[in-house]
Amino acid sequence: MEAELPSLPSLPAESVAARAALQVVRSIEPRIADAIVGELTDQRASLKLIASENYASPAVLLTMGNWLNDKYAEGTIGRRFYAGCRNVDAVETIAAEHARELFGASHAYVQPHSGIDANLVAYWAILAHRVEAPTLRRLEAKTVNNLSDADWAQLRQDLGNQRMLGMSLDAGGHLTHGFRPNISGKMFEQRSYGVDPVTGLLDYDALLATAREFRPLVIVAGYSAYPRLVDFRRMREIADEVGATLMVDMAHFAGLVAGKVLTGDLDPVPHAHIVTTTTHKSLRGPRGGMVLSQPELADQVNRGCPMVLGGPLPHVMAAKAVALAEARQPAFADYARRVVDNAGALAEGLLRRGVRLVTGGTDNHLALIDVAPDGLTGRQAESALLDSGIVTNRNAIPADPNGAWFTSGVRIGTPALTTRGLGAAEMDEIADMIAGVLAATSSGTTPEGSPSRVRYVLDPSFAAKTAARATELVAGFPLYPSIDLG
Ligand code: PLP
Image 1 (cartoon, helix red, strand yellow):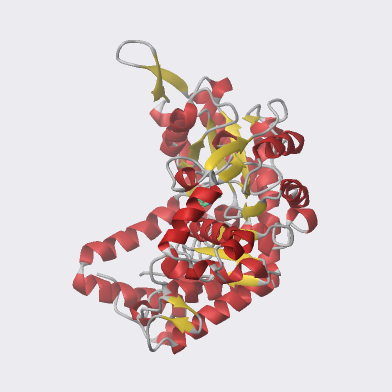
Image 2 (image 1 turned 45 degrees about the vertical axis):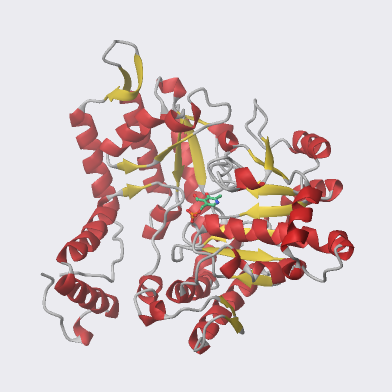
């Protein structure tokens, strides 16, 4: 049982709110209250290097726990399928306004429930828009929305293969960029572009050659595990040359765009026809997605719900508005700069200790460790690091001989630890811990005696000592310092 609720002035408002919420939850289902408390305890104690995770502010978290949850609001602002959406209209308008201002976008759609959903909205909008010009005239229809079923059948035949050119998974692309486990791999005939096998850097000339030959309808830029910068001006030139729509999925680096670390050719918004993102990674908002588009795609983007999305989550849209308002503050630009500086310091510390990094370093918020020189798979390294109190995730590296499941890489990123306030000195200490664990771990064998891709050998006392070091390190940087559960 949480401590008695104190009077407001004696505790920060965030603590009072968190204690009150837990007390109410506990009265109905105490196991859920326990899990909520347990998660805070775990997060406070863990050294989190997962590049896609962060810690949303108490304001963002508190915005989600209220009765905005109770409202249905299918459709979009001013065009709802439900009555009584006055407050949801206000919420969605404010969130979209912040998004447009923050990113300099002409249109923002803040409903997607996740990054995958945002990409699906974008694919729908691109396809629907493409249908519009000459084909629609031939079908004597004004918009894609008044086509008959017979027209649609004709269209599917006319369009033939819908082609998508996306970054390959082992170069750092995402499943939603045309790969089979996602519907995009079934909607589109997909081909991938990759990186230079020697430098590990994006090869724009090879990309252009593939685009010329393949003539894709859509080129998708953006990544989950590429540690360098992308020249979006160049990407747009390539798209224009082959008549493709350029879509950029900035899910990972939206916070760096928001914080003006990525500007000019490195900012996708002025160059892409359509940009998608998550709101919970480097952008540090609630779990969710968002689409920014050029005006000509706006109408189709706004049809996301109910075309491909379920009813909007008004409480999450409200939290997106709060997070976007936070990201418009000068402090967020400072945060974004520190994220990149910390990634650089961490990479340098690893390189100095002989750890191999894909591309030899990083320019953004993440780095990719190649653990093959340590004789390990990514899966073994991920587990050994976890035993040692360091939370990362395994990831394929270019031309990975171990495939996407076992992998030869470990991805690390700094958005979360930077939110906690860790800096360059702590990054060097973390580099020392990671290098130590990798050096101390060796590959195990299967029961038959052949090399295992799963089993590993790491002295438990070494792991425990490193874990204690990790806990001590993060303890100096309290997580949610204004939240005291008593
Ligand atoms: N796009 C990219 C580039 C991602 O890295 C991810 C998630 O890892 C997604 C989309 C999917 O986001 P979500 O998990 O919110 O659906």
